[in-house]
Image (cartoon, rainbow, N blue to C red; front, side):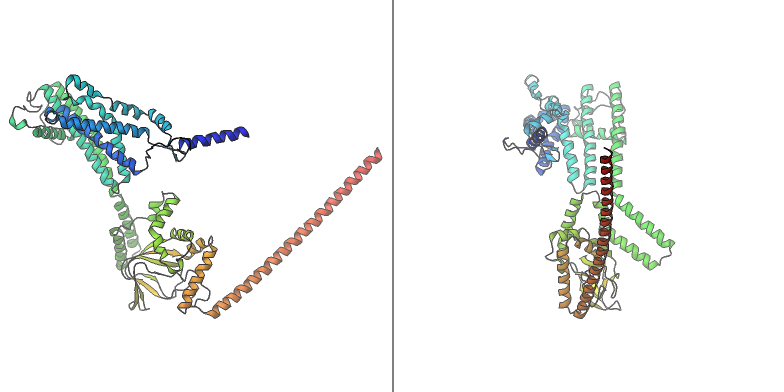
Amino acid sequence: MGLVLNSTLSSLMKLTSHCGLSSTRKEVWIMDPATDTYYNWLCTVSVPVFYNLMFLVARACFNELQYANSTLWMALDYISDVIYYVDTFVRARTGFLEQGLLVKDAKILKEKYMKTRQFKLDMMSIIPTDFVFLHIGINNPEWRFNRLFRLARLFEFFDRTETRTNFPNIFRIANLVLYIIIIIHWNACLYFAVSKVLGFGSDTWVYPNISNPVYASLTRQYIYCFYWSTLTLTTIGETPPPVRDIEYFFVVADFLTGVLIFATIVGNVGAMISNMNAARVEFQAKIDSIKQYMQFRKVTKDLEARVVKWFDYLWTEGKSCDEKLVLKNLPDKLKAEIAINVHLETLRKVRIFQDCEAGLLVELVLKLQPQVFSPGDYICKKGDIGREMYIIKEGKLAVVADDGVTQFVVLSDGAYFGEISILGIKGSKAGNRRTANIRSVGYSDLFALSKDDLMEALVEYPDAKYALEDKGRAILMKDNLIDESLVAAVDAKDLEDKVNQIEGSVDVMTIKLQKLRNQYESSQRKLNQRLTNLSNEVKSLRVDE
């Protein structure tokens, strides 16, 4: 037992130490990867990574670009190096989850980081290759290509941004366009470098002779190479044919790159566009199936037009999605929080639910069902059995006479009705019947709460049930809609029913007690008989001895 206890305590102390909860361990700074601070740091470190990705190759291939701004490039290079070193420290202090808790032990984090492949790449990216400049000069940026080993940070930033943005499809397309530009940019730089090695203007394939003023400027050099790279990789234009073997090899490599990479990218763009239209395609399929059904059943043209208009309204207002389907992948806790955030204030406006327990309101919020009504639709008619109460989210409802034209009052956003009928207040003159005709003036968005859902929630809150009934009864008395004689009659009937129930329960208990008594007496008789038999056997044994 002591061994098990010691082992358990040791495990708890180790877990506490991992999670940074030890009282004796000195508190150190730890980066939580789930915070905005971590995302902002990713954004910061992505800038020098992208800078190195785009400008190192350009400076290495276009000498004029390097020579013209040597001091600026040196300053930017060393600023990016400082950020790289800081990022290495941040990586070594970035926490991770273990058993659902954030590990904050600096030693554990450091050891885990050093075991990863990314640690080796990060170390390679901060090797000070600039010392070579002391021997060959500063205008050789190709010696800094090891800085590209930190590209994973840029991709991580893109992934997190895609998750955070409200426009993921647009971001994905922009991301693919950026990848295309990067590939074309690198290929353009390599084309210029190959042309420089082979000799500018030495044949029709390489870059023209830079002694010609038309092709001498840096701007023209880059634009020409970028244009050539675009035509070659996309294979959508005519370019001068290669002449030498190395030129053939370079063009073949470009064609293969274009076929493999650009085909993949274009396919991804097509898939993204399809995903962007997926909701519309699915919605249109629903409309088409309903149209086919109405034609098959020979529904009137007027009703068919109303159905189509209703669907148009849903799509135009962005209400075509099924809330339950959208939220089904979330855990119950998050579903509840979203429902509370969206519906709780609306529910608090209902008189009978004011001052209710927070737990009951949360239960009811989860049971609210959105409903949309078209112009002229009746939400309820006088005399109908009230099975739901309604809260107006958006739109206007009219209380109309039996002719359906005369309007008594118009209900707007935030109004509610039907709350009394679902409570089943004793003595109500209307009972659980509707007392008015309510019709939608235009398109109306309502929340409905059914009587069954309310009663199911009130099972766990009996005190709240009595309080709601008292509030409902007070409202009816204020509006002179309750009959005290009916209340007394109902109470007398309820009392008689309760007495009958008690009498029935007493009869049942009497029968059960009689059965138990009979069983007890039978058991006693059997026990006495066994004792007698046992006593006789003992006596016979003594006689034999």
